[in-house]
Image (cartoon, rainbow, N blue to C red; front, side, top):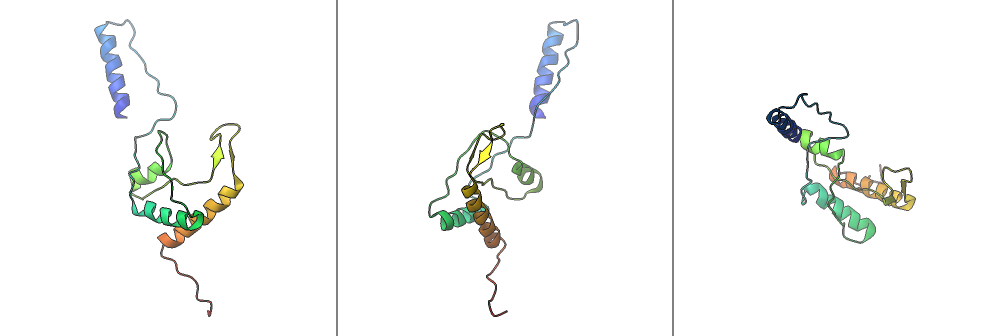
Length: 128
């Protein structure tokens, strides 16, 4: 919203300065969202890293990218910690999008273990 206001203001000021015969009309199309950065080092990230290592035997690799994720909604507007984690795939959001099924099984196991640890679940007593 702030950037749109700045662009609109600049376009209108330029049109006025140039004494344009027609007032400019700006149409905003495409996806637009408030900016967001996931800061590293959260308790949720540490939990995910432990669970990931317990399944894979390797450290959790992290990376940054300029993209958007629905998880920003929870972090920005509801103060709920969020992470992005998933299986391997190729061609995201393209006609050739696909995922590796073995990695989806591993991811499902890791997410289940993450939930169990995050929520403090304990093993069921076999006597009951």
